[in-house]
Length: 180
Image 1: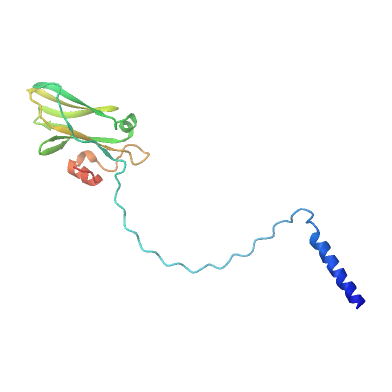
Image 2: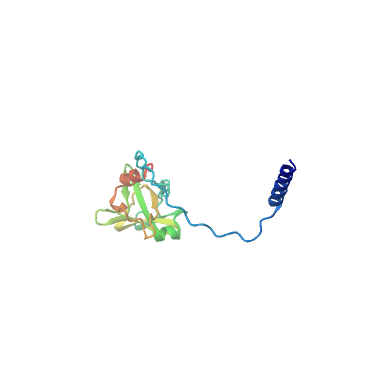
């Protein structure tokens, strides 16, 4: 019995010493990576989603503005319109389209009536100039205008995916989902 008590006491004393000891020495090296597990079964294909609509978030269009010609009748006249959306950056890498409306028709500019009368536009940062030229004095058409800015869609330069100048006003508005 004494031997058993002594063995138990020795066992508990040794256990207490081992538990209370701090870890000494550096951590050992990482063991080798285990083998690759088996490939799991292929999952089922999901359903195809619907194609999204082409966006127009970056396309800008002005409101219609009335044209007040600088002179008439004349062989040359112009109307300057503030255009804060037309910046140097827009002029460098975007497409700007200008439309002229003489009710009920909307024409993309430049516009030539007969061989002697032209209505066109010029751009500079912050302004659009609508102007007419004629071979003889004439009364320029009454109307209004608006512009559409199509920013570059790539880093390679102007927005060139479509030739917007070959499209009618209605085709451009429909393409970008803009109001007429």
